[in-house]
Image (tube, rainbow, N blue to C red):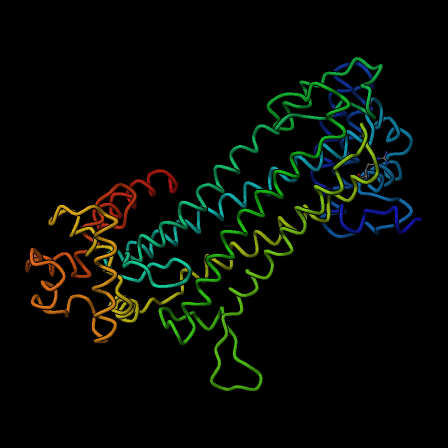
Length: 442
Ligand code: ARG
């Protein structure tokens, strides 16, 4: 049971947040005349010493002392004697753990946000460097239409932007559980606003039962991490594909790839594969805590101690992988020539031909689509791109087809013509880069 019960081996991460909360709590107790000023001064000195001992790894963890909260209190009492026993007046480990975890997570999530910003910056800078470079855009992983590489990169800037908005919305959780005690509040005349204020909360949680049993903030963080990983792993998958011989769109720096132990010629995109792989774990953490919380009666149940490992793991892994992705993006070398030549294969301008029929021959789109399909069949048979069919051949399908069609089929032109808002035309993408920098990098 001692081993089963203990959380110290992982919740020791919370020492700083827990001591910070204890200091505010003790000061408030003194301000409210619940303990003597002198006692507070002693407790403060003792807690600061405990903090130093944690920083120097001098505290020996004991499973019998269960968790970080008991370790800190026990050590405090060892140092300052029985005055230390007054610290736990008007609180419980139930409000204590919720408070410390919230403070800890709040600071960690700030780092995640700044890493997301760095990643957006790296993507935007690659987009600027390749503002006019073409690549095939895909649907079903089949080459579909030519697009700008910069447009493709900006898609990820937007995805990570939504993650940052998701992060911003976490502020709705920034209310203090401290002072809710075990579940019912306390008989002491405490000042919850004071501790909330000192600890950087925007106010207090207004129901003591909810305050000690709420783990929504962790669920939201696990959701945040999962979405970040959905985006990271899709980007990783593209890096893996693009660096493979079939595509040869990019080279990854040796720092983010490894060789094979048997095949001397190999260069494997390990970092991208690991990020893709870790996304499974992060989504697992999310599913795990949702399952733990489902159906728990109010208020605190020990099941909730299981919130920490998924939280710690998700946050740590998210930070690690965001940092790796920043480095990987910065060091990627694109090979625009290879991207461009794939645009000439597979009739990527077929939709532009159909659009031309609608605009110039006054056809409805469905008929234009069908007609283009028939012309594609001929080009396929002759094994040439659409723009290499002669006007004479094209006129057999519709005598009104003119020379002007070749302009619309020009691959560069097909991109310039995608003028609809949010589309891949260079003027759109240039504007979006300016807007994205203004929105995300300030
Ligand atoms: N280690 C516990 C946790 O992480 C702290 C709260 C314990 N409360 C209690 N009544 N046993 O959830």
